[in-house]
Image 1: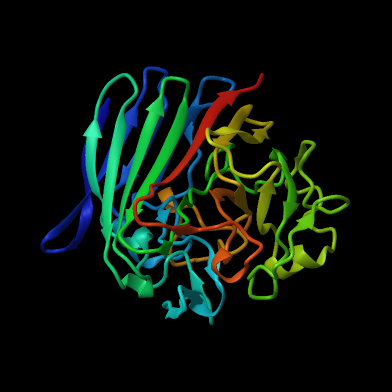
Image 2: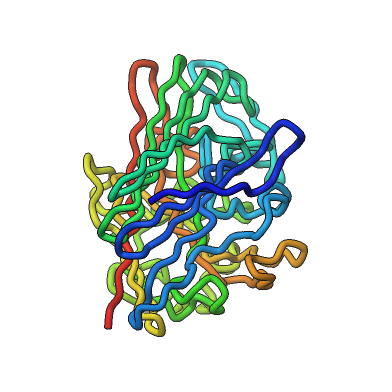
Length: 353
């Protein structure tokens, strides 16, 4: 089932709506036209009680003005690009710098702050098909890009996100979703007790501006080794230089074997108090684990007036390596004319007694 409700207006001519998908098992997901943002994910705990596990805002104004990219679709390239610059086919491109000297999550007005067209497709497994045209030169990027993102709420209590993009000119494309999760409920406190396991054998160290240095480092004997389950908080304050630079985890983890044709299970998260379990399937080679180290905006509280708090939520942003356009040894993010960028990530929720 899909319902639509008015969320606010950007101006006299641009009304913004949200769409709520619900499946037979009672899971609900709400998507906003602005940024294609996930504003709500309601799933049951081990007692059958449904809670919202996605951090977000009550008002459209907060989504427009606040930072953090809560729940939003991010592009044309997610994550950071050093100095907002790259060279392609012998030409230098300068992007908008919105993160100190660097470009972050698409620039000044990335896909996260654009109005997406939404086409609902109701049924037992309801879908929302979102589309966006990104013109040549937008935020400094070359080429026209057309993007389609399909959100599907599956009967298995899973949210599937399928991305497609085409271009008429060679251009970088690296899309993701920036949903903030707390499996105990978005207002339940810190996420340090969440037990995390990832099929990632390498990670990318960064400089003080959180730009990858170019090294692809093994997780062996580091706090970045989540190949066996451990709580997010276990090594959080261990004194590791990479963690101190970022104020926590804000790093790209590289999956064993890299990109796959079909989505495979890469990440599992368990929250013991609620019993909720999250499994993440993806065909992407990497994930950015972000532990909400900058969630401290007092002017923009979360839904219900819940104050923002650092490490109150985590993000698992499936993607290719950040700043790949400036590192020959990183993943290829250049989309060619005639090709289709395809990316699928599935967030499956369940309970563990």
